[in-house]
Image (tube, rainbow, N blue to C red):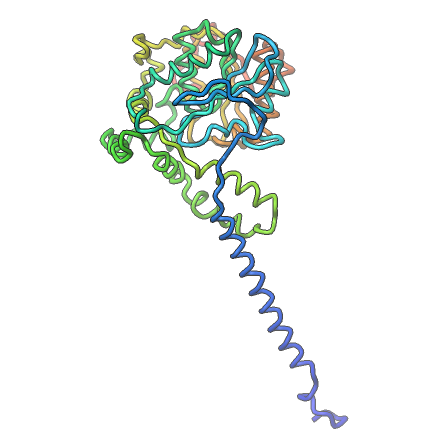
Length: 391
């Protein structure tokens, strides 16, 4: 009883505070459930990746489509070869604006722009070898004709290099991004995995795919290189930002590309694992394709090598050691704070480095076109390079 005779327990404040607590809990529960519902709705959403820039298909075969993104401007053309690594080829035209290598080439060159879209392999294509990959690339080069500048991304880099070695007259320049050429140099997660797992393991995977390498196996392997990020971190980021449209859109776009897998021919996949990744025959001149041994010395055109500082799939020596084996001038660039996939679609990488790569190819070695951490390597310098050195 208070001094004024009023019982303090009869005041409405305790009851009001209790009601507010319940209201807060109910509101929190509603928001939490709404967020969980949105998260799972987003996770269950299935979209197929696709090209972002307007284009027409100028060649359609069992193995690939050749897409043309600009009208014929001159005899000079750019041919973009996306990787065949279990994912859709539209990584070369990932998002507009700012995350498209196709769009960058359109803006910063006067060339006609083409890109290959590799198709998921059917069982009827299970016997295709690296010879067949070269024939497919030659189909594109012959149809395009004239002066063709080739961009090879990741695994397409070694294919482009093989073709440039065997048919140097057909390719005017090479730009390689995150491409393994000296496969065993520097180690790394991928190389360690390949060396530690015997060939019967890979052959077993191909048998499970009825002669094909199932893209889901490849995707799972890449996820296991960074398990926390791929199995936990990506989803936590989406859940905690489920009401942010930009974060949701980025997550949706990446999942559409990353989770949509494609199959590879088992024959060339096993050939690449053994002859390239395990035996490293390309830089040794021991790889036989189209009935001839491949010699990188036959590459006399300008070559640009672009690596990511944080790339744990293709380490810098695996790409940069190519400079010791080719005969033309070479420009090497390292993109800071950039991983493997970011090489092909990160805005800072495209605007800051790929644009300068095009400048090197089309306008020579003018220093104002190059960032400070690039170096042009000439043939006379390569004789002094020691094994394993990085410039």
